[in-house]
Structures are given as structure tokens and as C-alpha cells.
Length: 46
Image (cartoon, rainbow, N blue to C red; front, side, top):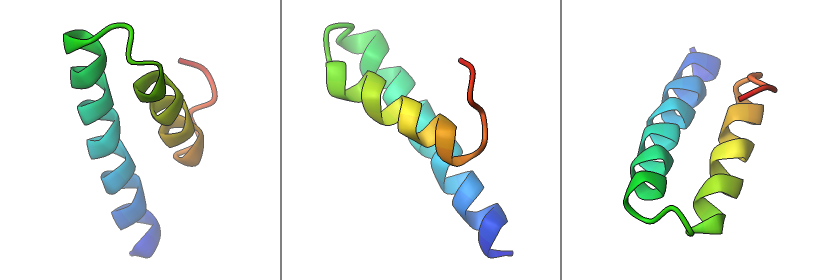
């Protein structure tokens, strides 16, 4: 159950980072954190 909760949390985070990137494409931290979140759910290619 914990793994599913973490995955859902990361997927929500990814949605937020996508929104931030759309609104401010030069926000480098959003790209970085989105990549970390993808890595944490096992999605190693974007």
C-alpha cells in the first residue's frame, strides 16, 4: 500500500511540475524535480 501511495504522490508532483514548466519554461528546478519524480516511480525515459 505504501508504494502505491508514494507513486500517486509522485504522479501528482509531476502534474504540478508540468504546470509550472508550462507557465514558466525557464524554471530549471521544475525540470530537475520532475525528472527526479519520474525516476522515483521507475520511469527512466521522458
